[in-house]
Image (tube, rainbow, N blue to C red):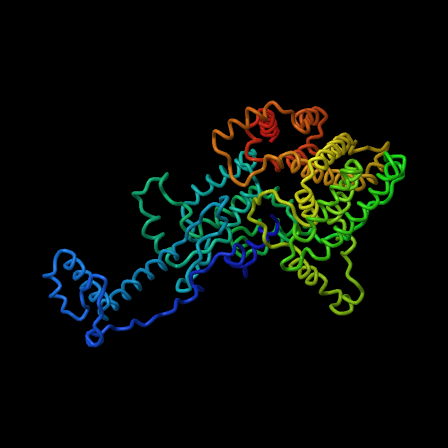
Length: 566
């Protein structure tokens, strides 16, 4: 989300660069094909007999005496000759030019559309023929009405009456950075200032000036939320020329917030594979049924890490496919696990390796804040800020899927997801689900905050408590995400079921207990005042639901409880 907001605030980035839209002034010109004239002499040089046995060399008038079919065919020939004439082709060219000019004029009209699930563009791109309009506070119309609308809109955000705050911030930044052509103001003068238009029907956001004014007023009201954004987004927002022109006080507040803010965007760098160490309590010979099972598990452990290292080395290569490269070996591995009954041991190894790799991606960057000495000698200490921005452009993914992207797996999580899909083992999925549930329940019961006996000890342990809380929460969210993936995997389909299919599925699935009683855990967290920890991992679990699960009685009550908590 921070990457989307930052791209909207950059002056040099256009809507086509952010969202991949095609600009109307950069379309590839169509190839012009010169028509080949058809002369009468060429037709008469070689008489041809068509399927109706009428020579084309005969005069068109002679075909009228042949009959009804010949009359129709002759009329068609006359129409063909008329269309093929150079004068008719010239007229068609003129008509195409007129239609093309109309389409260009329609593309110049400024349209500010709120972001939806399918469209996230800021506005329609302006043609090169139009002149961009600079937002001017003196040209703002209907200020009192815009102030009221800004207060109502801000009240909805403050009272949690919107489903997603970031989606609303995205819309406000759309208005702040919107672009309009010169034709917009001309239309404004003719339509917007008409006194006969009612207040309800009046289009208050017709001009760039009004859009910018409304956006700045909302940002002033929601400054508390903006101050929690990362430093880069706050800096870009404060450097926006329109914001400084419309509200100098807001720019000063943003500058101060940027100086005192410590929030940063974590760069998701791939982590180095670190194998799970040997633990005598769970991995020694006494935990296996036989020597054969113990030796078999050691071999399958080596195969697992071999697959993992191969994925890390080759998954970014063009044309590399997980199923084609590793699928057969994974399924053979599952057969050996079933023979030795080692699914429980492998599920524990799978979970620990998942936590070490996927939760350690953010921690891998923590030690890379200081560049090497060779880099310092090359660029100098004065250019470290520019070097860091350059690193972010190379590392931070720019394709975010909009302000509210659907739940997905990224980075090292893709290996573990694809591994489970290729394995297709119900036994492994069940053992892994049991292991994940047990670990989540243990994490949910951990005492996060522990106050010292004195004020000095509380200050010393505050930072350690924050780091401990973040680590435990990240682990719980990761495990809950994969638990939800396994729980709803048998019911996941690409297409929505029909109404009859949904009713039949509901009657069956309502009788089955959930894999984890998240409703009871939410109730318990409310009583113990721990919703700040429980709600995030429950949301991760519910993000993996299939099309039918939200309509089940149990999960309907869970969503209702989350709505009341919100």
